[in-house]
Image (cartoon, rainbow, N blue to C red; front, side):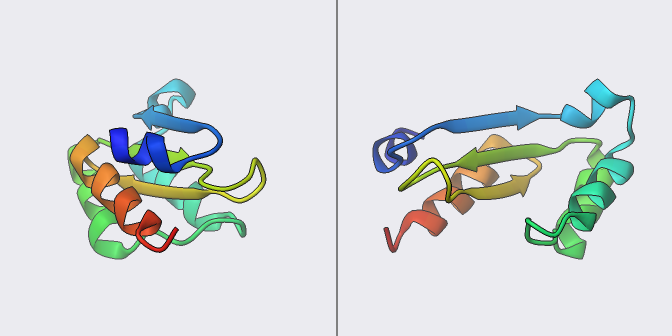
Length: 91
């Protein structure tokens, strides 16, 4: 996580199981994410893992400006950290 913090000039937000705040199932939450035009679709394998485990990690980070950001999803903290580091390799 320290590498991500050091690479980002703006904020980093971690959400864990936010679907529970809205009384949604993991499936409903993932389908809502996939329905937004401003985000990448979650691949089927990950979608099914999140639904099966009822666990959604969401890491949003702004490496360069307060406008451009990435959002990565997973079922564990390690998974989203590794995905974020992959996104930041070229920055």
